[in-house]
Amino acid sequence: MLKKIIKKRAYEGNKIEDNLLFVTLQTQIVGLDMNNGYKQIFLSDKLSNMCNFYYDKDTKQLLVYNTSGHAYLYQMPEGKRLSQKLYLRAMDLQPDSIAHKGDYYWYSDTNFCLRRLDIKDGSTKQILKDKERRVVNVIQVADRLYIFTDMRREIEGYVKILCYHIDENGDLKYEFEWGERPYVFMGYVRRDFDRKTVIVGAKTYTKYVGDYYVAFEPENKRFVPIYPITDEAWELYGHTMLEGNKILAANPKYVKVIDIPSRKVLAKYEPEETIYSATFLTKNKGAIFTNRGVYEFTF
Image 1 (cartoon, rainbow, N blue to C red):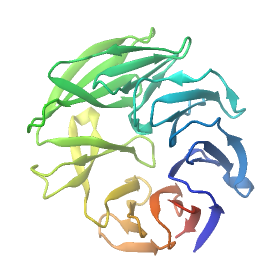
Image 2: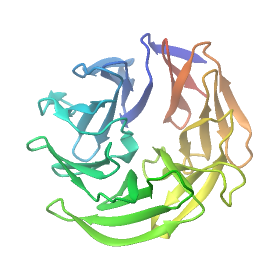
Image 3: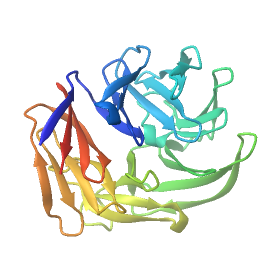
Image 4: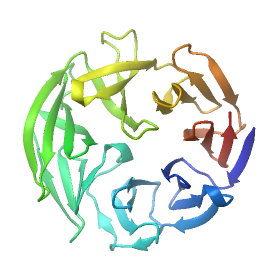
């Protein structure tokens, strides 16, 4: 059963706290209280172009930014704006490839290097720039950053993963690195429902049969295949190994809830609108984001 909770075009969203769903609209981020009939409790300042957001559960800071790299920083749950408009000097950032500790944010920038934002004064600094390789994504695990680099030229190469420790001053201290073959495509990064497991895409020409979504296990320096990338499952959302081994496979026409071990379809939803994305909200509830609004579903 589908229940419409927003009537505006919505591109994606995520549950930032147990009761709070935040949704990406065209130029703003809206926060909804799921325990109070999806009542609106937050609305960000407007930014041109499509927006997205990064939320730190420890500090409860919300970084709202657009595809051009302009941003605002808020303190939740009050919704107080902490900064004037920031310029990240990076475009098309993905929330799950942004790292944060203290006064600093790290992310890959337009020039293929790692960039650090200092929220005290809004300044940014380029670090880890390499003539031969580009920084593709940044994965944070506690006080460690795993920085994925790829060859700049369009040749078959390999992902080199650099591990750095964030010290108490916000400086990066090199620890180790390794090269990953077969090739792993890091253009797609998403956190699991548990917010711990990192999901990426494994490209063709690998030891996996075809293209696969894989789970990144930094402690073991390996990638574990989860589910094949198909035309049907062209985007994978809300995968969870811990909450019943279910995934959401979304395409523009429908969303399926799939059991990973058996590949059995547990539920299918067709809102008759263009689907942009979907996410789990609880073990048996989710949301679908479309060109005409947001739907809640229960399975």
